[in-house]
Every structure is written in structure tokens, then in C-alpha cells.
Image 1 (cartoon, one colour):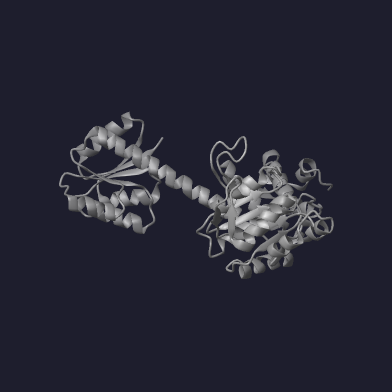
Image 2 (spheres, helix red, strand yellow):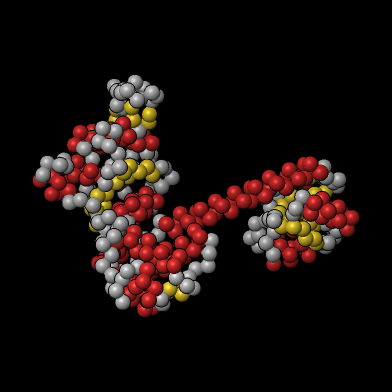
Length: 387
């Protein structure tokens, strides 16, 4: 139930508004002046505030200003019998959601309040999502192996150099690509990802370069490819080792000329993208077996970043587990669970063939199946790790 604070020095106005809002199933609190209203806003969380402008001691605009200074994010709807355009403009400049004249029109008041609550909900959801995204992008660890990866990213990201990220499945190659983009001069542009292993070889060219209407049987309309979508930003070619040789040839040409041609088209389109590629394969062996083009390899691997396997950075496991405990608690909307030092030691003894992806899955399973504190016995039982 949304909680609303009414700040007004007139008892009759407070009573009327409270009666109306409670009838509409709002939880309502009152304050008879600006000082009392500000104290309540500081102590409690309100979803919206209806605030009179002309009040003794502290007027509504001052309450609005001080609330903003204190970081109070409650949306304000200002109400006044002495409203002018100048007052409304001033209130809006100070951060008010809207301005309504007394006596308020009931329908307008309720619609404005609903809109303010919707906006507040969207703002909060955006903040939660941004928090989740920023946490997802963290490269966690202090081991020498992962510190070298971080140092390389810091040096390479601001440049235009192409980067080839290698490592086993589940080590976090995609995370490295995201960091390279976020710390680059292209961070305001798009980061477009293509999983080359997930796209059939006969469709990869259309996916990368797009196609014109009628280029093939199912091409019922024009399609913009990933190269064009990533223009001005970064194109992340994941699992590049699984790309067909014909598509490799076209990618090589695009990198050489900074131009692409859509499937079924003859017009050359200029593109400005930075390429970050990743693979879990040994591309030099693939070159020997004629499965990967050597000239493309040299184009892609201006900078090589090898992401270490989890077994080579076991000192980072406590930090990773702590991150996962926090992230999953946020996702579930629950309290973060603790984990015993013995349980951590047992997790560090495991080989983790599935790397960080496997560790996160195990931590999520333990959160679901264990008590308030995850123990070594529970790790042995639910993660199938010998104690």
C-alpha cells in the first residue's frame, strides 16, 4: 500500500485529503507544518508527499529544497491557494513533480498522484537494474593472474586496438569484453554481441552483415546486421573459432576496408566498429588444420588477453563467493546468507572444471538448500564436494 505524507497547516485540508486518499486505499500520514513534515520525511520512507506552499515557520518550497539537499527522493506534489505561474515554475525547478491549485480538483489530484507513484516506481526499478548491471560487470579477484588481466584492460581499453580474449568456458571472457567497452572512448556507443557458435553457418553472414529484402526465400524485409548495429561502438564476436571460413573471409574484408555489403545487396556501407573477439579454442591449432584463417587471426589478435581458469586463481574464491551471495540475495529480494570459513576452504579444494559459471551455480544451490549460515557439511552434501 503506497504511503503518502500530507504537509499542510490547515487541519480541514489535511482531514479532507486524508479521507479521500484513505478511501482510495493509500496509507496516509500528516504533518501540520514544514518542519514536522521534513522530520517525518527524514525518518520514514514515503512514496509521495502532498505539500502546501504557504505555511508558517518553513514554507513548502523550503521543505522541497531541504528535502533535495538531504537526498530525500520522495516525489512532491505542491498545493497552494495562491498559485501563480511563477510559483509553479519555481517549484518545478526545485524538483517538484507537479503543482495543483486549491481547492484541488479530485480527479486531477488522483491522476497526478498515480503518475507520480508510477514515475517513482520506474526510477527505483532503474536504480536496482543499474545496480545489478554494475555488479555484474565487476571483475572480482586480487590474485596475480586476474590482476594482470585488469592491468591489461586498463592499458588497452582507451585505445582502438583489436583484442582477442582466450580462456576456457565459464572463465568470464564476456565480462572482459564488457569491461573493455565500458572503459573505452566508445562507451557511450553500443556494445553488440554475436555468439558465433549459436548461429548456423548459413545464417551467420546475414546476422553479421544484414540482408536485403528478397536476398533469399525467407528474407521478407531488409535486415540490419550486427556490424551496422555496432557502428560507433564495439562488436563482440564470441566463440569466433566456430565461425565458417566463408564468413571469416567477409569479416576480414570488413576489418581491412571498414566497409560491409549486405547479403543480396551491392552497396558498400561504411562502418566504424572496434572488434573484440573471444574463443575457448586454440586458434593456432585451428589454423594448422585449415579451420581458421591465419590472416584473420593476426587482424584480431593485436592484443591477446588470456583469462585464467578458476583452478589457477583459487585465492579469489572467497571474494567471488561473497559477491555471488550478495548478488543472488539482491535477485531473490532476500537477506544475504553467511558462509563458514570451513565451507570456503572446502570450496577452494575443488577443481572447478566449469570455472566461475560452475561456482556461481553451486553458490545459488547452497543459498536455496542451506540454513542461515552455509556450512562445510552442506557444501559436501549439496555441491558434491568431498569433505
